[in-house]
Length: 195
Image (cartoon, rainbow, N blue to C red; front, side):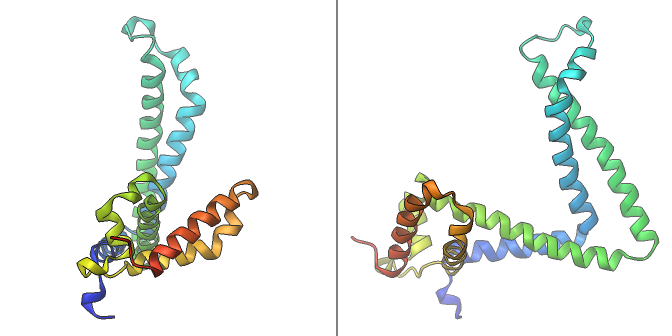
């Protein structure tokens, strides 16, 4: 594929994937997995234990009763996150000590690329929202022969993957709406946009 067939979306997807590859290799798999686990665990703890923490909160601090639940959730989340940060540092140090750093970095690069793919898929999914109807965004996604813009290769791949898997993930009651939307986007990729 020659350089002139790429558009802005394709270049941005490549930049995001390369950035996540390098960042993942630098940080390593353990750091990435435990960091995500600390966020998930922190959110879970904030949801389930903020009321218990709020009951222990001293009323002498003069906290606004309306803000107290939110402050309690933030304190619980940050507490869990900081504890997990310490655990992450200990595990990372252990891995480096037993000379598995190369494996950690290689797996980190793989996880980084997967995170980049997920991020790009979420951004490309925006075409199914009203934001996808913006002219410049639409031109980059589907191409515009009048402006000499080719359709996005990354978006074509994304739509193909969505098309192949859509029946497995969409509930039966909304399948007809999704199929109509999919056919509309498929038509946009094949037919030039009206002037």
